[in-house]
Amino acid sequence: MSLSESDEDSLPLKEGVGRPSMSSWHLGERICLAFIVICGVLISIHFLTSGSWFLGEAIERSLLSPFVDDIESRDGTYNLVNTAVYATLLLVFVVTIAAVMRSTSLLADERMLVAFIPWIIWGSTARVLEDSGFFTESLQSLYISPIIHFHTAVWVAICLAVGCLVRSPSKSMAVIGAERWRVAISILVIYLAHVLLVIIPVMDSGAGTGWGLFPVIGLAAGALVSIVLPLLFMAPRRAPSMVLGGAGVAIIMMHCGLFFNFLIEPWDSGAELSPSLLLMPLFLSIIVPVVLIRYGLSSRDVMAHHGLEIGVVPDGLTFQEWSSQESTGRMVSTTHSPKAMAASAFVVLPVMGQVIDGFATWVGIDFLGYEEKHVLGRNIMEAGDFLLEGGWLFLLVKLALSVIVGYVIATTWVEDRQRHLRLLVVVALMTVGLAPGLRDVGRMSLGV
Image (cartoon, rainbow, N blue to C red; front, side, top):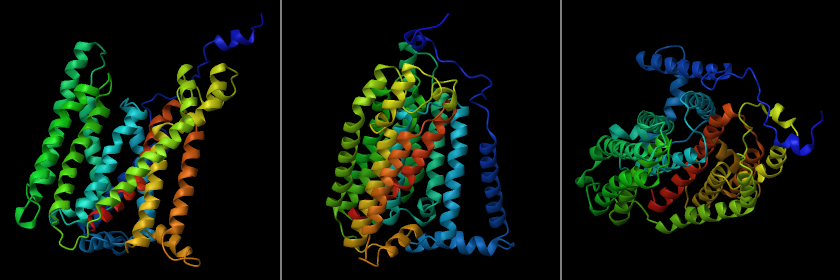
């Protein structure tokens, strides 16, 4: 008996068989994990032997010397070797952490992505505080690239682990209420631990970094945010992302207090304050999302109306199996998902990050006398010197890159096992775009 087209559309999607479980690791993920272990062993050997082994000189010259220069001068530069090594490490960590998150059944949607934003901002503000001379010598190295990325990853891992411990599978209101209080207490403990370990040891009134009005306000605001956010805004099954985002926001409140304190009483006597430059990322962080959301909002509404997830192949199917099916859901997804993705955080955030980084670098290089420290950025600017010196070509490259990044993410479909990889790829793009852009704006605003 034949089926009509409407009957076929009403049939459930055929599920694939023989799929690996979400907790299993494929070969590429195992190779990335092994690579991280090998790198850890090599670094351990280097420090245990004080650099007296056959790779010691190369590691010192190409990897560690630029790091030491950055600590001593606050403005060291990168070379091609350490740039390639750091990029490779970023890639393998993205793949490995995505596998870990998938194995622990963490959600990998827009809310989780948004929860990472405070830690991107935290990394930028912490770098600016380091540039201003806020941290003591014993803590300074924790805020120099690439160590700051591992430092940030430790706090993120702690937040997610604690969130997994306090989450509840139940959706009953009584259980959710208790879960919210557990999350609030967890955020407060993580926040106070961060203040105790990182902030209090460097508060020195003699050096101009004592407890003034604004640091106290920042401390209180962070404690208040720790409690209020989960009690008012946490949804069921969101404990990990709420702990992650809430702790990050709380710490940023403390950083804001320190920033305002610097603007009133700079502890760096050579700082030339330009707080109006903070308006640049504020403007771009408004205009870019508005343009993208207006472009894709109607398609996003269509996807939501049909109960379809943006950019994700239905659970249990490979992309090849799904793309060969003739169903209303697939037709709607194919037509509207790429455009709807433009209105999602997966596109808005990395695009905005590239734009902010491009404009911040251009302003800093051409108008304020800063120098580009990354080897690729320097090469791009040198390539543009034939016409006009400065950061104009870097800005154009970043604007073009933002379009390419947005297009690739919007038109890429991921299977259910690949959700976490997509999430971490976008986080990595923000790490190399939004984070340095915000750091540049912060440095220019404080004149450090």
